[in-house]
Image (cartoon, rainbow, N blue to C red; front, side, top):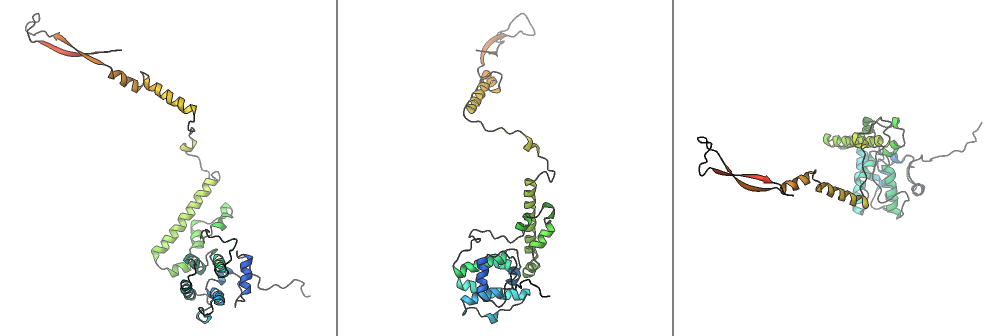
Length: 280
C-alpha cells in the first residue's frame, strides 16, 4: 500500500543559522544545497559560489575544486583570502580557520557575516561585540556534571587533526594543547566553587573566621576616643614611655673612705653620683 506520509526533500537539519539567512542562501540557487553547514562550507567551494553571484568578474568557479582533502580546502580558501583582501572585506582569520577545521559554530558565524556584508542587513543573533569562541564550552555547560568532558577528551574535541597537519610545529601544537587544558581547569574550578558540596570541599580557616564589618559614624568616633584613652593610661606602652621621659637627675656629693685609714677622709676623695628624682 502506498504511504500517506508527505515526501520532503532537502530540508537542512538544525544548524544554528537564522531562517532569514537560510532563505537568502536558497534564493541563490547554488549547485549543491547546504544540508550541514559545518561540513558543506569547510572546503570553501560554496562560499566562492555565493560571492560569484555578487562579483562574477572576480571569481571564476573553474578555479575552485569541490573536494574534501586538506590541500583542496587550503587552496580554495587561499584564493578567497586574496579576494577578501582585494575587496577589503572584513572576515576574521580565526573564523576562516575555524570553518576549515570544522570547529563548532565557526561556519554558522561565517555565513551570517557574509550575509551582512553582501546584503547590508543585520542579523538579530549577530552582534559586533560577539566573542569568537569555537570551543564546545556552551555544549558542555548543558550536560550534567558526570557527563562532561575530561581533559584528554577536551583536547580531542577542540584540537582537530587537520590543525596539526596545517601547522606541523610541535611547539605551537603544545601551546594549543596547554591552552585547552588550562581553560578546562578554569571551568572545573568554577564548577567546584558553584557546587562545593558535590566535591566535598571544606571551608578553610580564613573562610570560617569572623570578619567584622567596617565601623561607621558614631562607632568609629568612639573607637578613636577609646584608643586615645589607652595611650594616656600609665599601664600602656605609650604611658610608660611618657612617664620615663619625665624623670630628672640631681648630683650629690659622697665621701669615700680610704682603705689605709677608714676613719680619716683624704682631700680629693669626694666623688659625685647621679640619683634619679621622680617628679609628679
